[in-house]
Amino acid sequence: MPIDAAKALAAEPRTGELSWDHKDVQLYHLGIGAGVPATDPGELRYTLESRLHVLPSFATVAGAGSPGVISGLSMPGVEVDLARVLHGGQSLTIHRPIPARGRARATGRIAAVYDKGKAAVLVMRTDVADGDGPLWTNDAQIYVRGEGGWGGDRGPSTRLEPPAGEPDRVVERHVREDQALLYRLSGDWNPLHADPEFAKRAGFDRPILHGLCTYGMTLKAVVGTLLDGDVTRVRSYATRFAGVVYPGETLRIRMWRLDGEIRVAVSAVERDDAPVLADTVVEHT
Image 1 (cartoon, rainbow, N blue to C red):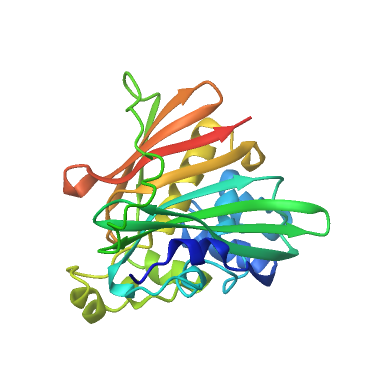
Image 2 (cartoon, rainbow, N blue to C red):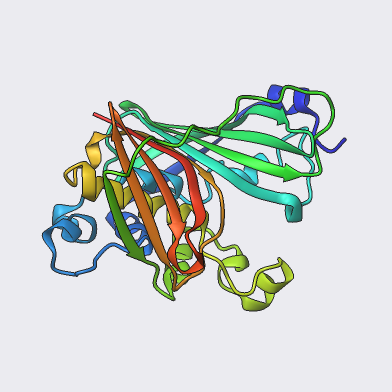
């Protein structure tokens, strides 16, 4: 069996140094659609270095090349065909606000391996800390088709009961035609998001948007709509990737305000509200 769960879980963590500055943060913000309209005070906090606030989802790209999804797929006990790999979900815990400039150490490991029958799910955990202590923890849920069925732990269900009643807010965000081309400059160079021929070989009509770009666009919408634009109020953010987004489409973002958290559902307007992000929760102060 290509995945040896015991060996993967016992493997030594991998560490790497991260560094970033305001240019990396600004590029990420532009990649998720910030800066429209360009002179809006709420947008300038994402684009102007003298006012810069860091959206917590920047943690998913900070110091591109750190231990992450690809690193996890090369850990001891894990030998899989990349064509069978899907990014199934992402969760982020923020321990304190992310500075606009920083140096930190990232420690990555396989935190869990689940047997879903027709697939395996690897949880790749990355803990990041600087000289003042922990900054954030990222969990990437990696779905590997055809690698389950060994009788292992199925793991917890990530499906949530839909929120009751109508959403408190609904907003729409347009995805520019060049959004994926800009977002990939933050470090995800997968040709699936840029090369039409590669996308067709992967089974798509045209290049698709990065799931983590949709993830960032959604958090920005939540912060700007229900958290008074205050990025420091976000404590954690988790989602399940339920479908793809094509550049040029429009995201419909539905938000339900609950006690201490905001539940979110995201769909693609032009495809009859096809689900894009599901089981999405933003915990906040």
